[in-house]
Image 1: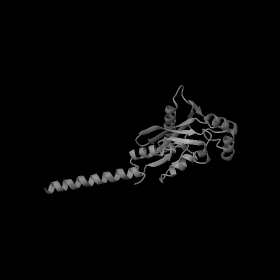
Image 2: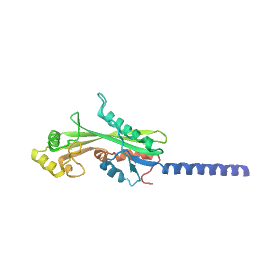
Image 3: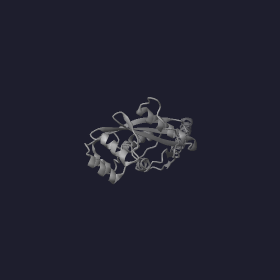
Length: 220
């Protein structure tokens, strides 16, 4: 009985040591946002966790006949992998987004004329935002990824409404020609989707699940 008690104490001690080591190892994993987008940075800050940003440099050219859903996931993974060598023992977040109207991929308008054309075509229609998300563990090489869709349904917009909106907000650097987090909300009839954060470029619900799979609890 005495030997068994000593053995159990030894096993318990080693178990506690290993558990402490693994717990400490998870805590020291750095979190990296593979983006310099101020919008994604602001979204991630909502989770009240420490992270730093790095800018990936990749070729974002679509592959021949590549579905948008596949493209955004591929590019999200590529962005994370592009900076992995600079961040050992880290969790890297990669994200990419494309907007689609009537089967056509939308680009950033860049100026009033293009934005006016985009919103005119979107009037009474739906734009689907496909957001690719990736979480790369550079220690284990594990990749988690998904595509999160989110749809905005537009009101019927008069030329005067469009012109007034564009002059007030000037969303010329935004695909779809609006800022949903600001005055752009007045353009919409409704939203459809599981995570409104995906519309701005970083699906937080999916990301939280990915982090929890890596032992990172947001509410711990």
